[in-house]
Image 1 (cartoon, rainbow over the protein chains, first blue to last red):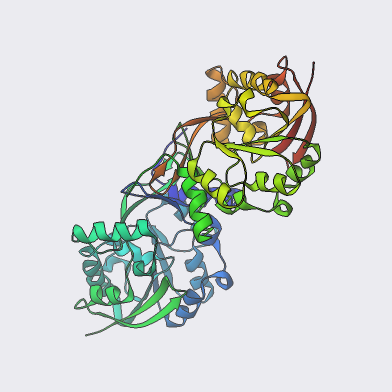
Image 2: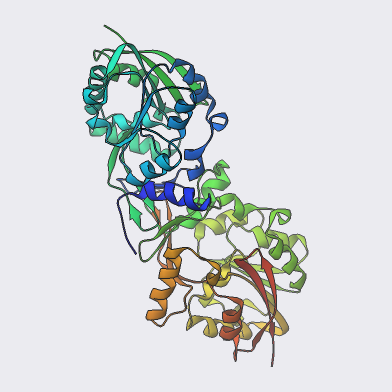
Length: 245
Length: 245
């Protein structure tokens, strides 16, 4: 039995090959808290009409050349291509990239969000769907990445970023976790996670849940401004950030 | 954060208190294979009309005083009570027992299947639903338990036992696992599992997936005979065993 670090990609590939949606994404937090996301891998393949409403609405703010961060199975990338955008996807999962390409994605690169640079060309919109604002990682990395995003975008560019507001929970386990984070000087919604799938275990990665206020603060002084928030229920929202200054 | 061994009971209690069915049961096999069952905790609370068809059909074979092994949230026990049976449930999860009692179960004991004895009185039917034939554990324990079941049942008694046929899979991970078991002289469907839920981890326990042929063989010479098999799709079935000799 081969164990790999590409647990996420294996989940994507298995669903792509078998169509079996009985598996659910399992995530472990670094304090040993294990949870199933409640979303099967099918969500990564959903056509536009089945996307969360806030994601569909926020597509109005997408224009020009687009960078899709964490492109996964290509859900967003394929839709952007259909709409006629020049779109580049990046992902760290080789198997997810393989699936996105098989499904018709024209330009996907195996890159971490921290590896983007001007050599990719300039973009008019950066999309972080599927709660991928989480890839901003932590309080130190987020402003650094916002500045990096400035260096790869044109005047008038936008970031369209989905996140989860961590303060809308009343789960005592989650509240205790927020408190632990605050004692450590971290943001309440600062997670360190790995994906578990069958024998496969991803590497641990930082993942940030940020309220709209926190998203605005993290962007402050980096050349981006949060100008609009589109709510999806009480937990999830899409923030629209405009390139300023 | 309090870690307990009653991961299963915590899952049951949380669902009972919050009605949140977004959690899915997560199980780890002792070789590190992690899987979500695809069933939320809601399945443990399902009313009769939502039970698997084979379980509903097999209720025809239930009569007299009944022992419900692994009674969980009381799904089967409450239905038996409604039908007028004198029914005793056993479970090893204190929290699941608490929930079953709150829901109206009259007689639930905190007992492992290996702890049943004539002091519980005699039964006319033993029910093992929700794949609880798995609690027969392994090749050594199953015949021992069948004999124990003889000692606590009346003439003409039946066991109504649900199991999963392990040979109907074509999942390469599962097939490799069968082969590993055979090399060790174990039955192919011999699992060692624990339940993961939030911070909670159950103890490891043996859990047996047996084909109808294997169920018949395990019962052979113990005073029970498999007389009928009711299929639920291609993987799951309910076996009816009659007390003989």
